[in-house]
Amino acid sequence: MTAKSSLGAKIATLRESLELSQDELAQRCGCELSVIEGLEAGQMAPSLAPLIKITRSLGVRLGTLMDDDNAMGPVYTKSDDIAKATRMHSLETVSDAGDLRFFSLAEGRASRHMDPFIITISPSGEMDHELSQHEGEEFLYGIEGKVEIEYGKDIYVLEPGESLYYDSIVPHQVRAHKGESAKFLAVVYTPM
Image (cartoon, rainbow, N blue to C red; front, side, top):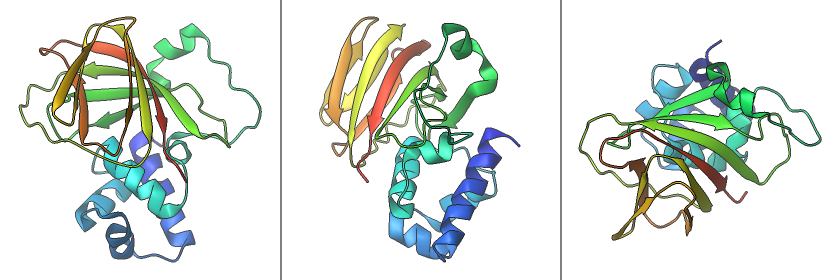
């Protein structure tokens, strides 16, 4: 099962366990019905903002949808593991942020309050600046290349070794800077 279809199956299972129709979940999380249908069918690559809204509406963490198992205890990730594409989750965005590939650094940790990811950005070439917003906080740390963050009316450019911590409720977008690929650490906190 691919990450995309696995994610859709998890959304459907959680929705059905709450005895919600697709339409009821869409209304509850403020998403279009077509988004819920497309995600569950594995026909749509999700972006982060709708996933956070969906998980909040389902009463689960973002990591619940992204994880492969529910082991307890610490999660140790070797540097070689990060390079393995088989453990990457690709979440395409709906704007010029490009194709974002997420590697969960806490995959398998069932009870956590933060979701740490190594994210690589490959520019898409589109020029739409659709900002997203959701409850919680985010911490970004530049690793390779430059990452551009539009936050409210401001724009920040992170170079390797630089970081940005912000409230996710403010409209924002994380994207490749000047059409160049980049890699960064992101820690996302979404309150339950």
